[in-house]
Figure 1 (cartoon, helix red, strand yellow):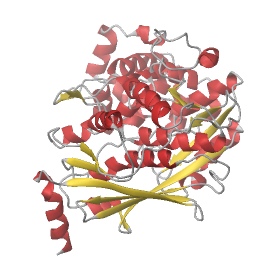
Figure 2 (cartoon, rainbow, N blue to C red):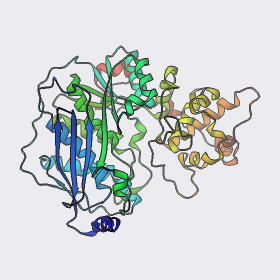
Figure 3 (cartoon, rainbow, N blue to C red):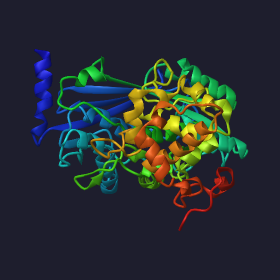
Length: 470
């Protein structure tokens, strides 16, 4: 049976000779697509396709193979997670010793969540370069549209919207960039289209399509020992944004990765901190910032505009732009483009907004008062570090327990201030009331600004930051 054959192939993980190979990639200018090809031990083959907009790269004279190759290296973990094999074989392009070290560090960190949840050792992800290809040339001289124009990846959530709004308030020219994970996602999203209309700025939109022998990737890995969990989406957007920067003639790429992304999930696994948000961390930002200029595009400048700020500060700024409130979506499992109102991200963002907005305004965003939902109470507890069984932070893009507690305290004050209002269910729970009454809130989070960042000097005023620490 085919299922048995697939399972047998997957169970070959213990074989030290097993490997996933990034075989090749190709750019078809007629269809304006880029295809990436992988295989497992010369057998099972996988493919991913990147759809480019019409005339995208049409005016770019530089060789973009190096950028495409690196995008493929970011796609690789999606397929590796189906097999968790010992070795990674790279045939699609050349990597020197320093590059191999960079990608090994990246894979070990960005896949730490996967290794931890599946109880796998770290004796895997060994990179072997098996190619006769020459090193990809570094793009060094190109024409810029505007030396201070900023490209901003659009996620649809509060962070990228805050970055864009702050740049616009500071009269900094900016353009959107979006990466979708299925066909027509960008065009069919009323939220994204409304964001573009409100910001009055254009957007470069790319779309990824993951496939394997014409089957959905999820079906292809079904029955294998390891289900994918966690993914390097932020890193994929990082390298894809370089492609958009080449097309538009931009130097600066500003993402919205916040300070709390530097903190892991309260567990160290085989000597490495598990951080669901590793590719949003300042550690990764520094490494990839240097890597891009050395190996991909010499004048590219990748940075996070929100690295100095805590989540609670970002949302305070975000709430100064109420037009975006009905448009943003920070939920991983939205129901037909609506908040699911039951996941950790929904719970966290609900508390953040509740710290700065009147309760009815927050209910309008989510469609209900999440603090009244008994089913979501354990998720609030886990965000606060009060989980009954462990102290792990949810494996989601959420902030620290201190940020959550401060938001809870501020939200409680907002409900108390309502005329003739009864506290919602969660705020009436004894352990919640006890914490609010006895614990001092971490008010320092409201004014504490991180001096470790890569924000260029011409943006310091617009982004309200001071020069970085030396």
